[in-house]
Length: 242
Ligand SMILES: Cc1cc2nc3c(=O)[nH]c(=O)nc-3n(C[C@H](O)[C@H](O)[C@H](O)COP(=O)(O)O)c2cc1C
Image (cartoon, rainbow, N blue to C red; front, top):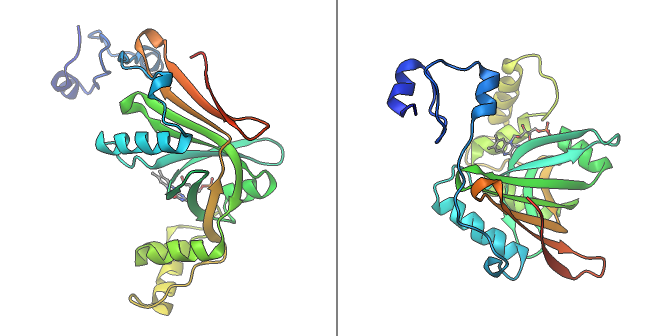
């Protein structure tokens, strides 16, 4: 039988897309193996591609926004330390142009330290509800200070104080330590006045050389189309096996 949302609510079980669920609740590990969405037949063909990766990403970002995705500009940023140990976390895309993507963070954070020794990142937009993902890889550099100042100044007062108060990725004794630091800064920089951008907070610019657009298809025969910059600097598009 297929459990309806109302049944699932009554029994404490969740609806798992279109899959058939037996009356007996499965243990969590088996539930993971059984979760299965049927993907659509709407494909991504070479003819659908915009002339550039950035125009294509802009189009899909617009469709993610129109499709009701919560925080469509949320993306996973993967970095690695000097030993190649990987790390990933979500940030918000705050700038996109023909050559690059920009996000903002603390330069002394774990990601900042990893980018200092290994200035390359992989980005991932996981638009699962649309059966889409976009993956990008490329070198990273810091945004210039004036542009970071301008973006910092545009942020809400509370966010600016928090950026100043939080030694991102460091161990805290407790939450009270963080709130005390924020309150002290609020007393020093009252609302309505200037809050200086911390020197260790600013933008990173990712300049992708590989950008993949993935569209889920029926029977897991998905579409993967990639824009890749070759050694001569020219962009080519390729189809990858799913
Ligand atoms: C939806 C979402 C958006 C986020 N946006 C940012 C962001 O723009 N910048 C940022 O530094 N952290 C952001 N975070 C928090 C990061 O995921 C992460 O916890 C933080 O940057 C510390 O990561 P690190 O210790 O690996 O450097 C966001 C988290 C979520 C879930």
